[in-house]
Length: 115
Image (cartoon, rainbow, N blue to C red; front, side):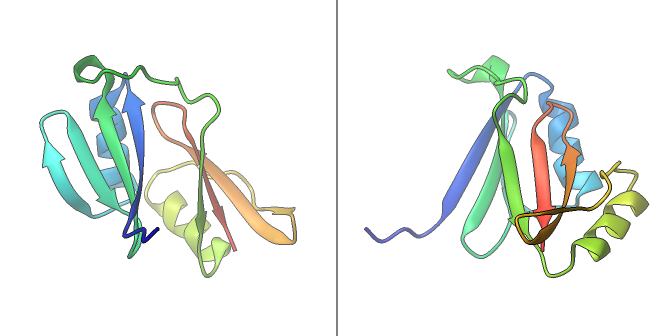
């Protein structure tokens, strides 16, 4: 199997707010956009897409059971960046020999940053 990219798709009731969160608050680059679907670049081979539940065949999970886990060089730098963007990150915790913080998108999906 030769995997070229990996894309996680979040189906959202609060589609416009969730797209704005990833585009404006976190400033992820948009690599594809339609009137009900936006794909963001997370890294060289990772994508995160946000789809409007009202236009899709899959319902929102309402943020239950999803954690998007993102490894970064320094979680302290990311925490300061997120706070400066008006995002409310949790305090940094020590888990599994890593430094970890969490934020939540408007749909309730948990995003974990760790280093």
